[in-house]
Length: 491
Ligand SMILES: Cc1ncc(COP(=O)(O)O)c(C=O)c1O
Image (cartoon, rainbow, N blue to C red; front, side, top):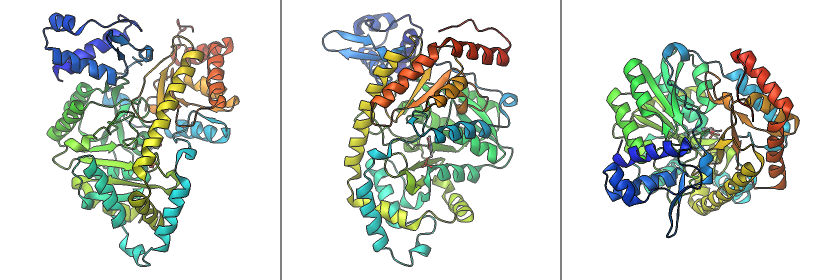
């Protein structure tokens, strides 16, 4: 870790522990320079990093202040698990029951994994689909078999070039959404019984894939502010024969956290030293609120160890099911697996998206989408501050459309989910994001829908449920059943 990162982490701890309370002014750069014996540029870099994490903000001619969003944070970071603790995974029943309930609500989709389809350029896309289908070569059914439509792969490769990442067109395999890209990548590098390192909290589909393929998950803690715990990962790699890692380095689901470039580089170096492949899930890469798109870990990969997976599902066309993997040294294996499983992604959809990428104005659409998410995030934060109990904390993501909230300890997110469903509101409860059903007092909310009175009311209702004495009783019941101890925390 660099000096400025060490300093930023130390100051983040001060903020998160409340020793530097919200609204308080940070020491001047000169004070820190003297106190810590570091250069001014180290302090400035640390302050920029804290700003990027949403913990502080600069006020003109006054200095730096701890932001309200920094009520944020330290959602408890779990320990890295021992193998005995992790072993086999059984997450599907929980995820299915939550997703089924969410599907039936038909009302306020705060638990949904998708943004509002109203934010996508549906009619322009239909024009491209039409154009793609009209000009489709009848022989494309054969020509577009894996690795996929060449026009589309060239457009995807160009976007890598635009981001300064080396990803030859020959390494790109088109898939049915990112989920298939991730699953094929996992299948390409593992056999039943193998150990796979995943994030905790992390995207439940990774756990489902591990469960389906009879693998074993080893959870590596993710701090909502600083991201993946590299020390824990290094220790896990030393101790266990980890066969692959499945991580998100940008706008992680569910916490929203993004690793710094230095950390991404260190991650790739660590995995290269152990010769362990990284399956990188980067579906939110284009949804950054800052000026530039954050680099993926793939950008630091010189050995072809990173399988970079993404799709157009979150940014353009969820129903088209078009994703891809830039699979490095595993390209041929992934390509074969694609042929052996679902043969090919939809040929007209590939042609349609290729046409849209070339002529449809994708970058302009992305700018509008990012602005919409950014403003929806502000509205969401105002509503959360207004309606949730004072002791609720959340992280402020710098991209994507999820916000991860830690509720007071005594709250059981599953009980809250049940009550919210009765009110026509879906939420994503924390236990969905862990093989061991941890994060019982956390929830993930979606801010990917245009702000409305209905959403504001839904947040108010969540706040009301949280202070309802019955909810506290339910939570106590859940807790005492689970832990056989009386909780000491109330709201
Ligand atoms: C983190 C993450 N990765 C991958 C996917 C799957 O993407 P796709 O719909 O392109 O298969 C999702 C969808 O919810 C997701 O949230």
